[in-house]
Length: 467
Image 1 (cartoon, rainbow, N blue to C red):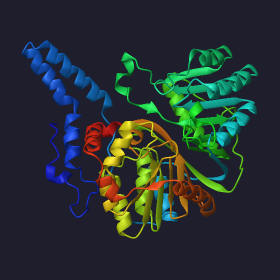
Image 2 (tube, one colour):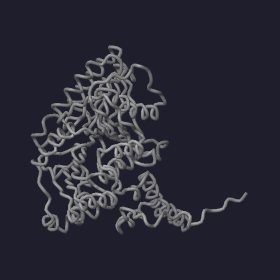
Image 3 (spheres, rainbow, N blue to C red):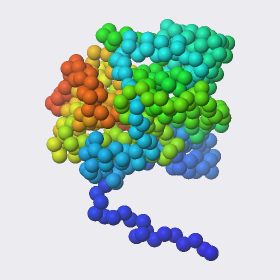
Image 4 (tube, helix red, strand yellow):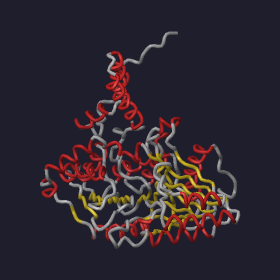
């Protein structure tokens, strides 16, 4: 039987539903530029015309735009203001949309800066008896890496199964010395999405996770990788300000599952057995949701988590993120939150950023956010790198995901969510400390930025979807 196409009028969504985040003109133009099909057609056209150099150039552009194309786009419907944050309806929706339940019986320690989280991580590794699993975007050569490698090698020689999954781009500077220490001791090292001809469609998919799990019972995640610039207390300007969570309890199992899925994808080996997934044992009073986000899922769980929390806020939204580059949908939901009486504060890294593209794209959006009543702050003392969101004093998330399209549409990410007023109060105190050390962004100052700065922002905006 001949297949008939579905009539267009049947494919139209209900007109009374108002979509959020209508693409700006600049976004529409940028999307056309980043379509790979027109460049491929031009390749063929110039071939027909025997213009070989032009054809080669168009082919290169087609290849680049194909590789860098985003795997998903933000939702525009279903972002109505419904159940308040912290309510049963809110939690059930978060569970249903992300496909991940809240697991009871957990303890979380908040570890501020490298002088707190690196010793805690090394101490946990030294106590490993059966297994160590590490997934890292950044594992760079240096004193910190040497300290970790020494402990991992010693544990491997003692019979502990040590598995490291490192991003092939982010950890490319691991160094021969560190690699030799690990491999000679019997540690298993796998590289996530190496740049090879057979991975051409996945070049832009990186694992941005920072996961350490010991014996399936103690886990760490947050914003920090393994590198020297995270050491210290973030007092000198060259020490990065960051945060990690130390987890104990049943939620460590879901944390490890993200590693297990990517290890299987990379090596073909199933991580299984009691050495990795021991019987669940309660360790504290907290219910924890561990959300793994992947572009392979077709929709970013991290993006959905952030958006649902924003539209559910009633009183206050506090965001800390080094690379804050919201899309039109996120901007609309934040401005709408302000309009219904929610205080929205966003704290970002300032002059000491390590990502020029992200900084320019972020600053370009200050005007529309400030006009909408969003309060913006820049942290200039050092590189601020934690990824935190607090809502209404009752719900929070900490993880690896930046508030930008790269994290949402290209990267593997992990977020730990907690709904507990006491825990969120402790997190809020830390936010207020960082806020007191930051500088508010004034609309007048932003408006007076130079022509050169505006030009840099416009140029950087062409790569907005890649930061």
